Every structure is written in C-alpha cells, then in structure tokens.
Image (cartoon, rainbow, N blue to C red; front, side, top):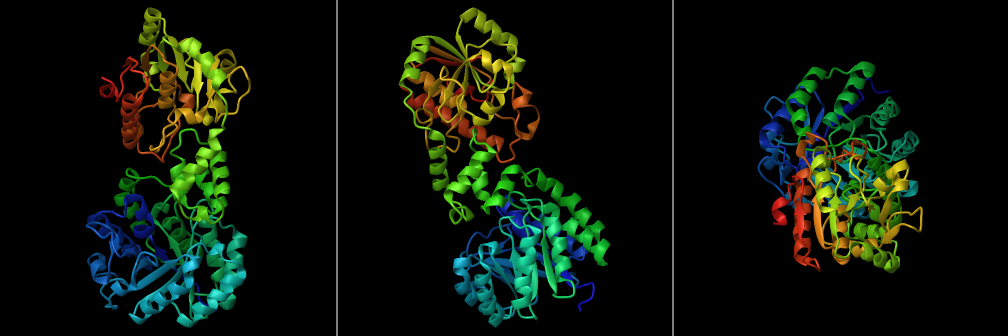
Length: 539
C-alpha cells in the first residue's frame, strides 16, 4: 500500500486558463505565477502549450523546450514542469531532446478518432526523454470496451501517467468510479492515473476528493487544478480548494499562504480582464457534453433562453456539439426561431397605423429613466406614435409594445400592465392572443452580424418597411463598460452578461446602424432625443 503521499498536485493555470487571455498572460505574470506555485510546493506546473505556431512575447505557447526554458526558475526545488501538446496542432518533430533545463513532461491530448495515431507521437515523446502523460479528450465518450481496448495499446507505450479527462464537465461520482475502476484493473501498475475536471456541474472539488479516495492504496495519482478555478466557461477545480483538502485531510505540506499571495498578486488583476465560473448555460453544456464555445456563441443572441440553448445542443447531436461549428449553430438557431408565418394581415394593419406617421421609439436604456421629463415633453409637443422595445416604461404612455426578445417576453407576460397595451410581436415568440400584431422574425433580421436579433435594429427595419414618416429614438444608449451603472431604464430587466464585451457590443451596434442607414428602403428622417453613443452615425 502507498503511504499518505500517494498523490501529486498539478496546476495547469498557465495552460487551461490561457484560453481566456488569448494565451497571453505577459512575461512578468507568467514568471510570478510560476514562482508562486513553486513557493507553494506544487508538485507539477503545466506552463503552457506546444504548438506549431502561435508563439509570441508573453504567451504560454512554445515550439520546443528551449522556447520555454526562460520561464523555469533556477530554484525550482522538487517541482516538475509540463506542457500540453495537442495531437492535431503540434508536430512532434519540433520537439527537442530533454535537457533538464526546461519542462520535464509532455501531456499528449487527442480526440478518440485520433487515438491510434497519437500513440505514435507518445512513443516519440518518451524516446526524447520526457515523462509522458496520455490525455484522451472526453473520456466519457469512450465505451467501456473501447477504453479497455485502448488501455491495452497504451500499456505497450508505458507512459508516466494516463489521465481521466472530463472535458465537458459532465461527470458524476459514479462515472468517475466506473472509469477509475476500468483503468485501475487494466492499466499497467507502473502507470499513474491522473484526473482533470471542469466545473460545469459544480462537481469538480468533490470529484477530486473522490478521486484521491479511490486512488489511495491502489495507485500513484495526479490531480489537476487551476488557481481560482481559472478556465473557459465554468472553469476548473480551484487549486486552493484541492490543496487545502490535501493539507487538512491527507497530511500534505503545501504552503497555502504562498498560493494565496499568488492569487492576491496576479489573479485579482486577471479577473478584471476575463470571466469564468459556474452558470446555468454552462450547466447545460455539462449535461449535454458540449464544447464551451457553443455556449459562448449562442449566449450572444439577445433573445435566447437557457431552454433554447438546451434545445439547440440537443438538435445538433452528440458528435457535433463536442466541437464547435458556428455555421451549424447559426443555421440551427435560425431554424428554431424563424417560426415561418404569413404576416400579410399584420403588416397591412400596422401599415394603416404607421405609414406616414411620426414615430417615437423608446429603447430600454437608462436615459429613458434619466430623461423621462424631456421625453414626455417631446410627446406632448409632437404627438408621435410611441413604441417601446421589450419593456413597459412606468412614467411614459406608450401606444405599442414591440417585443422580439423571448426572455423579456416571458417576463412581461406575467405583469398586469402587459394585458393593457397593444403589442407588436415577432414570430419567434409564443403568442397569447390572435389580436397581437405578429410579424415574421425573418423579415426583420439581417445576417452577417453576431447579434442578428438586436431588437432595436429589427424594429427600425420594420418601421422602414411600413413607411413611417419620421423616427425619433430615446434610450438607445449603448452599453457601459465596467458596469459603472445600470444599462437599463427598468432594473427588473437588467441582465449581467459576462459573455459580452460592452465595447465590442457597442461597436457592432454602431456597425448595424450604419448598415441600416445605407440599406433602408426609405429615406426616413431619424433623430436621437436622448444621449447616445451612436449619435454621430445618423447625422
């Protein structure tokens, strides 16, 4: 039986966390994080990627060991260093022989369909003197029979470690127990078993504890983690949680204060540049074993709900959702929301009301609240037809409520005020009454933008098609970086969207407005009556 020190802790912040920063931490930060982890007595540090291309100053992307050598401190103690080589992105021919001056281990990762070819690369890694980790992507994607058969092939290579990789954060305790048992009973006894988890189901910390329990007395084990859980989407197992558990319960002597200093010195700043952590959409990704990039793409859709994401992931199928095909996602999304209808009656009815009429569009920006008095003064003086977008303002009388955002629609249908206002709805929304004016979603969107379903632009296109006489806009503010204040006139519809960069979002809305001004059918006079980031576009 192995003693209490049967497991090693591997921190992969500089590799798995690198996705959030375009793999660019900056040289000083890389050195600082590595030194902090060495001071904390972490057993292994994964310092980045081996890739054929993509290297650069301050990046954790390397071509060979000489490329990475500058980041290995002279006083490394007993800490070992590792890098990850993706079979499809790195030619092992670029890897130089082990020198002892740079990284000590190479972790070869690959998809199931690549596994046999990847073993040839694994042999070369060993031949060049490195410790070899075999890292099969999405181990839950293997049947028991496939996994046992593959283990027999892996045994011939005799790796240092074979890792259980929960790529999509889909594991429960019984899944881990089943996979560990298969490895323990079939993997060569000289081979360690590793565990790499993602936190989509908020199971990472518990699964790591279970992994340490399972391996005790049976296997030398290596458990992966990242500082503060840094990683795409829901993130990874936090190093500080695993370290604390191993100190408190298993008698290890890691220096947690040094790790906390590293968090204070570097991670607080990194948090200002990117976001990660548990959320409902990433829970859905875990349930369906879907690549996190699918979620990031779909969350850009203004009208999408969590159950819509669930439907789309289910629709594209098990194989396709493990990767990310943005064209497929876009087509599936459009198929889902288009709800093809004949809207000729609604268009004719709305045309009778709107054609030639002065219209005031009230978007839900914060300036509607700040400038309510001025907006009401404009209404009193100009008698426009007032149309609010996706909300019902409390202090301004409106003639119509326009809705194309499914989440907003679900909210407002439950409010008493919704029943007392005339409505214009797009066909992607479920309708309560045939009395609503329902127009085709497809007639109002324009592909080529990430936010094809921006409600304000969709309404402007509708007013253009209905030959409005003049358009005034209030509340189309743009988004405030840093959440310095509310972005919305009604706090009930405020959404904290960590998947969007406000600056980039403002840029695209501006581009969509410019496109609208150039391509609209009718040269309708357009003016903003509240402050906006987009004022210069329509002048």
